[in-house]
Image (cartoon, rainbow, N blue to C red; front, side, top):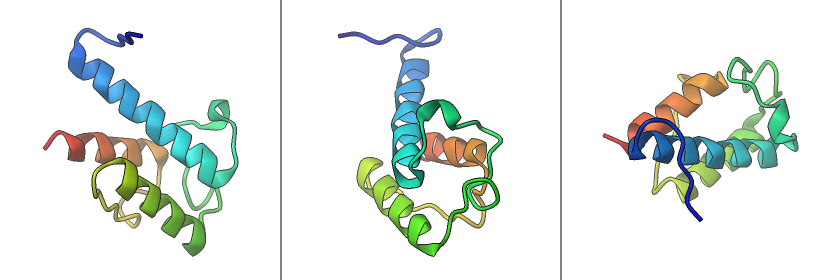
Length: 90
């Protein structure tokens, strides 16, 4: 199977990373993928508490090769996606 999103291979990789992160977030917060919107706040809109933050942090660490997220700087889904994708391409 081949997936192509965007103009080049890099866009496709970023899209796959975003899809993976969406799946992790949906799992942690018990949501449908279509309920996730970039403007949502992890704390205000999704009700992230310490337990969910820890669970999400561990899943991100596992799926994205040891990436640890500072959630005080990444409260919106858009910012979280940007941080994960950019960190993987540093």
